[in-house]
Amino acid sequence: MVVPILFRTRNRSVQSMPVVLIILGSKSDLEIGKKALTMLQKFGVGSEIVVASAHRTPERLWKMVRESDAKVFITIAGLAAALPGAVASYTTKPVIGVPVSGAVNLDSILSIVQMPPGIPVAAVGLDRGENAAILAVEMLAISDVRLAGKLEEYRKEMADKIEKDSKEVQG
Ligand code: AIR
Image (cartoon, rainbow, N blue to C red; front, side, top):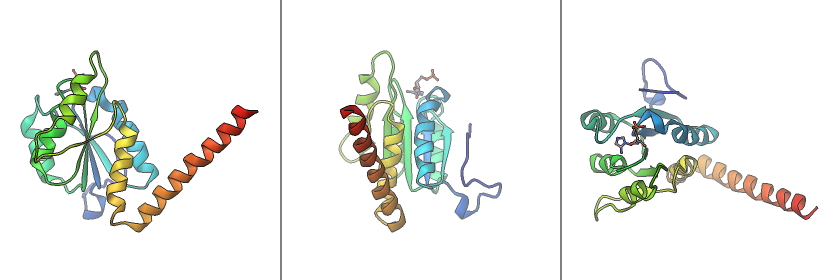
């Protein structure tokens, strides 16, 4: 299943390739994927959401990662969340894992954080799709001055809002 997509064309020219590929373990993770997508759109970073499960569709996942030209992968999964680790084993590009909340919570967190030495996954908090997107932008901004500037602006927006909130609270 392919959901959105920004910068996607029928011919899939080099320019249309998503810079960040967001992979969901299930369609049920879509709301968290949308948080990542919205944040990437804010920064003007092309992305695409797809569904592929490490357990239910291992070959589909492998093919998807191997054929992707994305620079960073955002992987979102709950329960025994093998998805981020599996993706990290198929590529040397950076992989960010987003654990999905559920009845237990620690299951997906530990499945993502406790990777064996040699195959790291960068983990963000439970359901924190937007943070995964910001982290991806930070990785891309290392070699993109324009993106680095946008990150500075974003920090300033947050600081300005807190100033405003404080004034409101203070009355
Ligand atoms: N999942 C899917 N394949 C392997 C795993 N761990 C995860 C999905 C979702 C959860 O299982 O990422 O968060 C429940 O999936 P579903 O499809 O039953 O809603």
